Image (tube, rainbow, N blue to C red; front, side, top):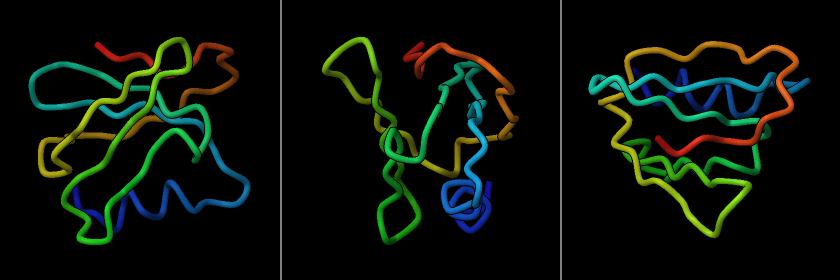
Length: 79
C-alpha cells in the first residue's frame, strides 16, 4: 500500500473506521484516527489496542488492503 493511501484514510473527514489487511493474513482494526500513528516517513504505522496497553508496529509496505469496518463497536484487534 502506498503511504498516501493510508494517510488519506487517517485524515478522512468524517473518519471512517477501517481494517488493515497484511500480507501474512493478519488484520488490524482502526476504529478512530487516534488509534493509528503513521510516521512522517510513511514507512511505519503503529496501531493501538483499546483493551490493552499494546501497539503493533507495522511496515506499511506489508499492508495489502484497507477495508471500511462499518458500524462495528469493537476496538482494534491485534492479531
